Length: 97
Image 1: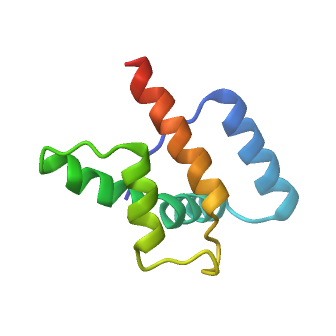
Image 2: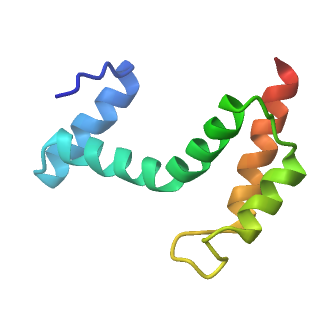
């Protein structure tokens, strides 16, 4: 069981969607969480493992690891462009700290 607090605007949107589609709010929360984890889980797990070992990979190293990894650009839902955007965002965030 999980309890999540949503900001009022997000709660309103979720409630409206639920009412319009006659599906429970939990359906959409599960769907969104599944999609998020599918997209980020492998990347974040690999990054965390490297950080636990004391190594903070460079952006170039991360891109190289992904290019030689199990996923290919043809894998369903995988996009190097999307990944590069995410890595660039992570780099900007890291520089801002």
